[in-house]
Image (cartoon, rainbow over all chains, first blue to last red):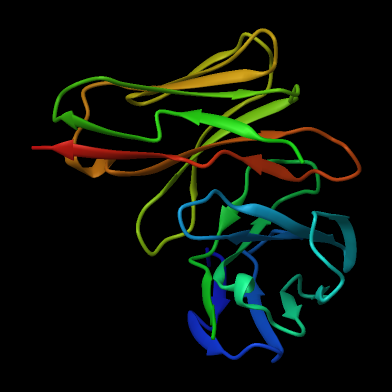
Length: 113
Length: 112
């Protein structure tokens, strides 16, 4: 059974640039959620995808967008990067929409200079 | 948005000691979960609680879902060095989505 994998693991961008983060869900999981974890904080919900549709969004501006593909993998896109976007971005997959039992990847560490 | 207050923020204990940490909220949740995060890793689920008053164990870990649905605690018995890490509580309530709201974490250090 393959776990949740994320890429890239680390990246550095400058303010104003755009970034795409990728996530492959665990085998058999059809739901993907994205969380932002600032240093020293708990993860904060960005949005969730189920059957290629966004299902719920946290308190993040529209420049945070995402996609889910037919194989349940997902992308997180962030436009017009700001310094405060520096964080660990976690992808989590689950076997259904309603469960809180999430399986997290190791995250993508984004640094915005 | 909703806030979870997790305490203590950090703790240092001797190997073999028991540990207790808790989480409170101003809002109710339908599900409480406890996750552990090691450095450089994503959080890993330890225990999930689905019913107010429920007490659930997973090895040396025991967690309870408070009867008011606004709090939860996690106990670790006979701590060992591999218990080191950051423990997060998380609450889930259907409110347009099934998002989890996380606390800020309790950082546990175990002294051999």
